[in-house]
Length: 317
Image: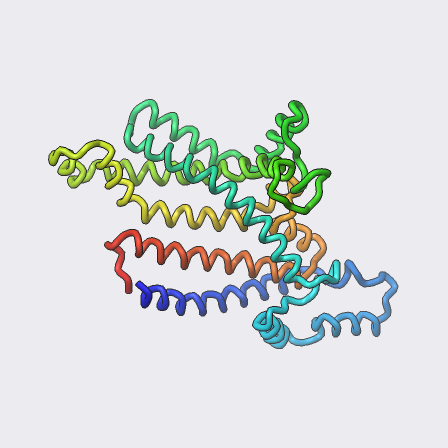
């Protein structure tokens, strides 16, 4: 198992290199001048040239990339053009908040999705199955930013039960493990969990329904095994594929929550990415995209290793 993990880790390195190249190039080819937001309108040509030289924008793209990667190897992601703060401080602080929101949404979504999926798969082609399928399709189809706005109107504006903005009292961006702050997490976490619930439920429903029709399940019943023991065997057979789907969904929850974080003013990576796009803040944009992309790569590595550990049928080559 250790050798399999090391081989997978080695294969991740060229993928990470490709991700860094794509992140750098996509940001560079976007239209607009990143220094427009901070440069005075009446700046002279000499002042513009000095500003470009300060941020290294006067060099050819290959040299800019080499300098950027070299600085990354030393833990330096540059400084934000808009704020002047180190990009690493802003990105990692935002990623921590996004990870908190993503894990909270996953804690809600994955158990509910697995339960509904097994329920629909066990009672396949029944009214209960159709009801779960309808709920799953609705969850996947409804725009989550629209759902977030509706939840704000109902639970914040009309009922006044839950706050709708920020990560703490008064819309602050600081976090603490107390009820005053955790109340701010409920609405965005529930909103973000709706789509993964539908995806996981439909995946597990298909897996469970297919496995229950296989011959070995009938053999287990013929041996006198109880229904609970049979379902445990079904769950073990479905675990590897379901795990891969949940791993990808966790990556989506971290990187795809930009609209949810904007709706709820949640100080995460999506909110930071949105601001960086509008401000054309190249260092901050590159750093945020790179960290989110590397998170996806890391999640794929973890899922691959976990699948091989759970399912012995997967070849460890």
